[in-house]
Each structure stands twice: as structure tokens, then as C-alpha cells.
Image (cartoon, rainbow, N blue to C red; front, side, top):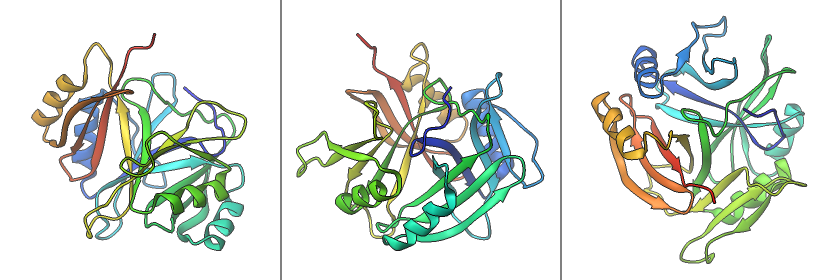
Length: 255
């Protein structure tokens, strides 16, 4: 579990055209315990200790099914102003959610949708534990612009871990910290696919990515990218039964 640090992941949520199907799928796959709808129409998956794993909400209108990453902030109004001043646009908010916090959703200059969350005191987010968010990376055809935009909003610094040309991948680190909070992959996307965040869910090493894929496909998911090994662990990308993309990561053993 983690307390909030501005600029670090603070929440993920799923907008879905079929809330019942999504709840059934993720509950079965990750053994999530999901609240009933709160007054704002939102449902939370929580750990037994009460930390938030994810939110689920019915999509507005014809909005496509998708997972959204929210970064923590202690000044959501300022983020909204700076986002528009530096080439982004505000899609929703900032608004207060009674008893929970403030929410803002923006589109960055490369087209990716990103949320910001200013939680109420005492908020806890489940991170890097089985069934919860393990890592997030921004897939964009304009990596340099993305690095500069989020640096201006959150103060992150980008460190290149590829060669910067054939493999352009940066990890973003917050001031005064050594552990990266998210990654950014420069990649050419299909014209109909906008820049977007890919959210990886942690898999228990005793289960493993391949076994989790077997379960997910039985439950109605489809494999988008076959499992493979990277330095961080074994990964795969899937789409859930409603069409929302998500990824799995079984962390590599640590020395």
C-alpha cells in the first residue's frame, strides 16, 4: 500500500459500457471485492484493509471502454491551469467528489487521457501487490513532448533507458526520489489509436502470467500481445470482455 506522493499513481479506473460484465470479470480474475455503487455512481475494488485498488464506472454516452490512470496532486486547480497553458486540454473538472477528493481529467498534447486525483486525508492506494496496479506506461508517438509536458505539471525528470532512437523508453522519477513512478514509450500507433496509458496489474509469482492468461481467456478476455520476458518480469497485454485493454506483470525475482 502507498500513501500519496504528488506525481505518483493514485488511482486507476475503468469506464465500461457494461458494468455488470466488468465487475464479474475482474472479480473472478483478481478476486476483487467490489463495493456497491456510491452516490456518484462509482464502485471501488478494495483490499481487505480498505485500500483502493481500482474504480469502475459506467461509460458516458458512446465513450469507449478504457482504463484511466490518475496521478496524485495536492493542488488540482493549479494542475488544470498549467495543463492548458502548456498544450493540454481539460476534459472534465476539476470537481470535488464529496467525501473522497478532487478529480480532473485532461488530454495531454500528444492525445493521451490522464487523470489527476487530490484525495481526502487518509486515502490509501494499493500498489505493486497481486491484483493491483504494478506499473503504468504512456504509449505515445511524441515521447519528447510527453516528457516535457508532464515534467512541467508534476516535476518528474525523465531518464532514458533505451538507446533513444530504436528503443525510446524513459522512466519518470519525482524530485528527491530514486524509484521511477511510471514509464513512457515512444511508439508509432495506428492512426485510429490515440496515445494512451497501459496499466499493468501485478500477478502473484506463484500463479504467473501464463496461468493468469488461461484464466482470463476462460472468463472472456482476448490476448493482444503474447507473454514475453522483460527485465521487470513476464508481461502480456489483453482486452477484457468489454474491449478495455489491460496488461499483466509477474515481477522478476529480486536478488
